[in-house]
Image 1: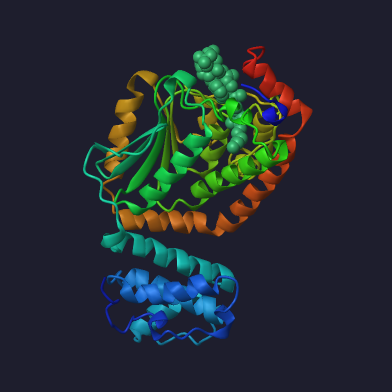
Image 2: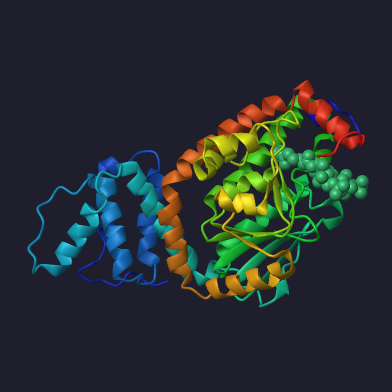
Length: 388
Ligand SMILES: CCCCC/C=C/C(=O)SCCNC(=O)CCNC(=O)[C@H](O)C(C)(C)COP(=O)(O)OP(=O)(O)OC[C@H]1O[C@@H](n2cnc3c(N)ncnc32)[C@H](O)[C@@H]1OP(=O)(O)O
């Protein structure tokens, strides 16, 4: 890669559905990997506003599954309504592993906490641009946090600073009182991907060190998307390249302008897939279509991306902004907790796997960055000999 180049609260209401977590009885089976998180969730749950019976049942079931495993008690009689509801909720978890149940419990409590702990919430005023970003414009309006990449003259190429600012903006959005978060681009491009000049500022420690810091940055960046707790929407306003495409598999909804294209030219650049695309793309579009994009760098249109499942819906470019924002404003009025919890239910079982895939992709990529193939490709772009 270019690395070889040297250039220029209130307690949960005490009811007969009160969750066993409140008894603060942690069985030995829960005392493993995420013991600390689990214990902290058990304490946190006491401080929550009453989350309602449905959520309390979920908490009950997950707690039982996490500490005792699959439901092992006789089904209560049909008139024993409350115990039957609790038994049904626990039994519905089937053979869900204890560790997954524990993780789901922690995630559920964390989702509930971020919505109920108003003292820790950032409450941006409507339609106000958030200060402190140089490469982004971050705004809040109609319960939507909009993160707009803002380097239109450079096709919104992602500099090291932009990676860091996107992470900051996502972390803030996960805590603010917005219902949904949208990533989009300013100008004619959504994003041209990694800014290839990122590869040129080699530290005195050498290129290996540069590859190492790049790997950490990319790992943290992708992890932020894997962990983002609220509905995350991409409004792909124009062509998208590289990392801006691969992470789309981690979004909940992807709207595209009819002018958008999707291009992952990793082989051309002597690199390899990232953003968990080695897993999400084959899963979304099937291995054959994914291989054409990720190995052969086939650029696909918005219509093709939609047919292959990467894009949710395509809008005519002339009405893209109007139609997308009308749609998103309507969605943002839905109950935010329900949306967040639904996302958790859909995504949580994959999280651990996605983190492992992210780490593995980056291990491989770090080696590619030190290859001659990558160095030459970046050099050719920077010396204007090659463009995609
Ligand atoms: C932490 C490390 C993470 C690594 C993982 C990420 C991997 C990837 O994202 S791989 C994809 C990398 N991206 C590219 O290879 C795209 C390179 N750019 C191009 O091929 C072209 O610029 C274009 C096809 C995107 C657009 O072409 P065109 O319409 O002709 O516009 P210009 O080339 O004139 O671009 C205007 C301006 O913007 C600069 N620029 C555009 N993209 C990048 C980029 N990715 N990196 C750096 N600079 C970029 C371009 O150089 C022009 O600058 P000026 O000449 O100064 O005006």
